[in-house]
Image (cartoon, rainbow, N blue to C red; front, side, top):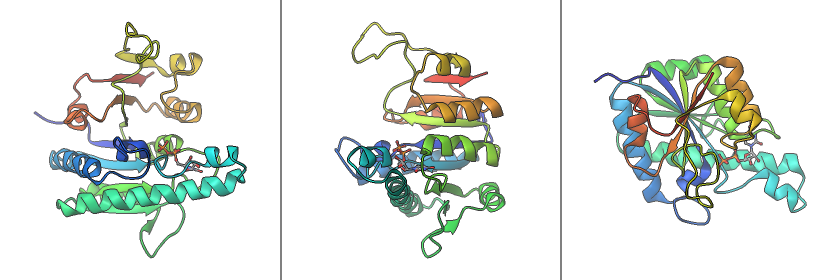
Length: 237
Ligand code: UDP
């Protein structure tokens, strides 16, 4: 069976690497994600990753505790680089070729973000991990995912989370809540369904990039998503 996509952008939140810990990185969780990504790359699909940093540092939270917002955001971006390098290490240990590109120059440890170079890596079958978000404070890694997906012409954003899609109410509070299988961007924006921030959704809408929201904690789901199986919720036009 062939894959459904040629090039995908996976958005991994910082929390996805945290597992059940309260902070930081769970090496076993990262190892599991890397193994699954290895299987996906072996099918021939090109994979780019935008990784978050919320498991280590969030600018907004630091600002609410009195820190200068932009400074906090820059620290948050550095946090994403820690996650990017951890993921890179895990992938390379199992023989998956990778490159980390950062939106803030850190040339001793990663390449700078260069769009055409990122595309070339993808064409060669390397997993490209984008670190340091967009390089700008006041943005998020969700928005970065939408931006990079548009730039590299990814066909879809995989928004891997801890829930299996978008519901009409919080399923943890309302057990009878229904999961949507598809949704429009407009609906997500109008109902303020917090799947990604509104800037990210608007950017996807403008560039017609579908977003598949699915549960990363179910083993095999990244592969299922790549194969076009109907898991999670697909947000599109
Ligand atoms: N950040 C930023 N600009 C960006 C991306 C991220 O300033 O383009 C900062 C921001 O402080 C954010 C932190 O990096 O809180 C970590 O990213 P995010 O919260 O998006 O990570 P996630 O929620 O996916 O773990």
